[in-house]
Amino acid sequence: MTNAQKHRIVLFIPNVSWLNERLLMSVPHSIAILSSILRDKFHVEIVDATANNLSPGQCKSMLQSIRPDAVLFSGLATFHHPKSIHYAIKIAKEACPDVVTVLGGIYPTIQPEVAARDKNVDFVFLGHAEERVSDFLEAVFKGDLGVLKKMPGIGFHEPVTGQFICNPVKTVIGQVKDQVKPDYTLMDLTPYLVTDSLIGPTKTVSSVLVAPILTSYGCPFECNFCATRTISGRLVAYRPLDDIFEEMDYFVSAYGVKVFKLSDDNLLLKRERIEAICKEFQGKRWGDDVCWKTGGLMAKLLDEQLLEMLAGSGCTEIVISVESGSERVHREIIKKRIVLGDVPRIVRKCKELGVLIRGTFVIGFPGERWDEIRQTFAFAEECDFDLCHFLIATPLPATELYEQARKSGVLTDDFTLIDPVISGFNTGFIETDEFTAQELAILRAFEWDRINFKTPEKTETIAKMYNMTPEQLRNHRKYTRSVLGHIR
Image (cartoon, rainbow, N blue to C red):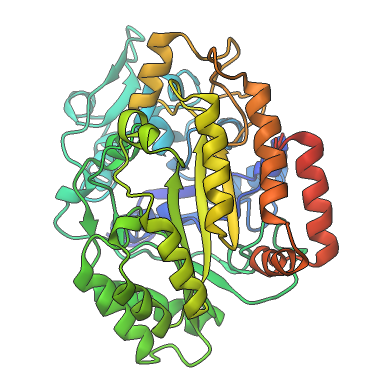
């Protein structure tokens, strides 16, 4: 089949500024995965309204020019961007009334019925795209309703009765035989790479490019607030190391990337893999001036030898997901495997090695006492991280925390993740006899400011970590205090 005969598919990335939602300049990894899977069988184009700051009118014009047979959207989060995604789907239908719209990703995977309430959504696609999405699209283009009704992980309204049909997924990403290397060649990633800051790509101090890399997907652990088990299952899918290194080659050669951020759910699960990655950096494959950082790591997997290996390979910053400073909260509520006594040791070793270290904490779980919340802040302060992040427990659908909160009646009356009053993990939705949502927001905002900015030296370090000027950081702190961390 020639390229002219192939069905035309558009991968659409909405512009969150249309609805004044929080700007998260995150490389569209899922779109790159779809591009890699679909390009052989279909004619694929990408409309990236975020990177190119496109208006709704410009998007409509592009779609009308392309005349796609289907437009695919990826709902990357349960909140932050659902409104923008649905608005983009509306734009697609207005531009091309007969086009097939498909909404996949995290959001419809854990809330398919909610995502499908939008009458402009023709299909919701649950779970991973590998090994499934091409067959699905071919059935759509053939109009084979019988096949679609039997496909796992597909949801749609039956044309005659209007009944919502949604089959559960049968496989998870960890069962996929061949992991897909992302294809970024149809996108200009520069706007996504120019900053690792909170304030967006146009106001950064440095033009050093930062590229996120996922070397694996999934998590085998049982933290009660995490939806990863629903999204990816408990199996972990590991990408071939050669594919990962070739992806890094591409970022360096095509964009001049100087920093990589390895953002896996559990980067350290396989010791031999992290050792191989460190060895590649030590070998200077990408040059003397290329370094790397990590996403959240499990403290129990970090020993002194591994920390020395990370530092020796050019790792300049790590993040430890601590969550709580209370052993009881870890054991009885969160179900997170951590020994709190390991954390100060890790912080001290990082400072000895010259590796910056962030700690992330979560407060406001059902069953958590006020004194345990205060204990978390005290523990964070005692550890003396270079930077601490404090989040408020948010009951994501399809998590144990969500079910506990619903059953115990501790959610605020206006709770919703589709059209939240204020979006993000800075907002309290859970209220108990121990605390209110407002108390959590006030405490979080002011303790974040007090603990992180105790000295001029710490403040200077954090400005560099945020990639801000001192004036920008002062304004950011002031704004955080004034709105209690809420980002409308």
